[in-house]
Image (cartoon, rainbow, N blue to C red; front, top):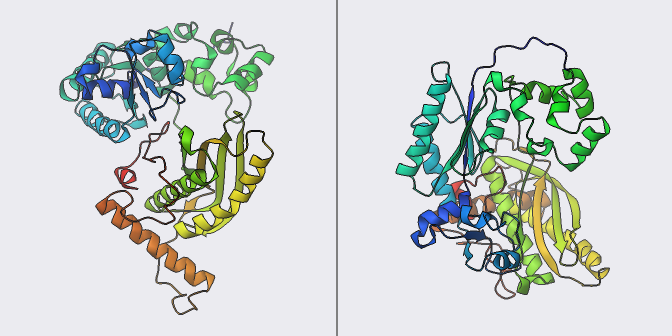
Length: 432
């Protein structure tokens, strides 16, 4: 048994809202003919891709995010596959945030379909918190869309509120009070906790921790030793309901990737796609007020799941032309890797990431305006000015109103803005 440890009072402090089957529910809201039917949302219209969302009806057939489309169709003959429309999902997200805000301030947007709200002292009694959750759920259905159901968790801290929201889907409501903890968590798996993956599960097992009960039976120090690393005892306190302050986070990389359609997986389509991804990343970098010192090109060949990765140092820059010039220097390495593969240059995915980013310094008038036009410093200054001008034109007139060539070489995949895990695109990204 665990050593008796005096813990502070642990009232209900967090309400966590998780939209059910979000992308698929948005499509059912937009397309009434899809309501009540098994639906998956896919990035492109081909059976070689995977589902990025499955409706409640599709999940009953064992279809989920990541299921190959060809396999999903075998599991359910009535399945409807619809292409993703990320801009519409962001619009629904904004409407949902506004509706939740009518009832309680949204403390943190966790992802496109998840948000956390901190409960005040006058709204954290169990009955009051439950009534608040029911008003929020009803408000979303009435003012945003009848198909947009949500599961809500209420608990003393955000981690437990998130775990509670996962227990009843769809349209659930679960409360963890101080008196429920930690024994109400013992039915869960260690991997249900964010941050515990396969490697951490193995590490804990080597230390004799195979489930949540065994972790909670230890003292905080012993539990921290099993976890390892700084603040290893933090999880013990969270599982017992202590509301610890959150850790500050900062943007570390800016990047985009794209799964290439089967007919466009050769060398030249991949190169042109990478250039377009690099331009999107550079534009987003400028909008955030950052510059980067490292460029990473990553890819996956058709014949393996192992990724290929190459990188090159950048001068601290936010200029599209500097990024493109260094990107061109990486492609010979990718070609060399392809020559060693039996399948040759056949890429399934290509991606570009700008890393080691830092805030850009305040811009002043250029000291290099009178240098020779071919001087590297003068060229960098011109390129950055032109990059910003392109940002303004595309924001006003739409994606690719102006672009950096070459755009020849046959039709390429459309590269739209996509919603990444934990990141919601800004409106301007849909014009890049």
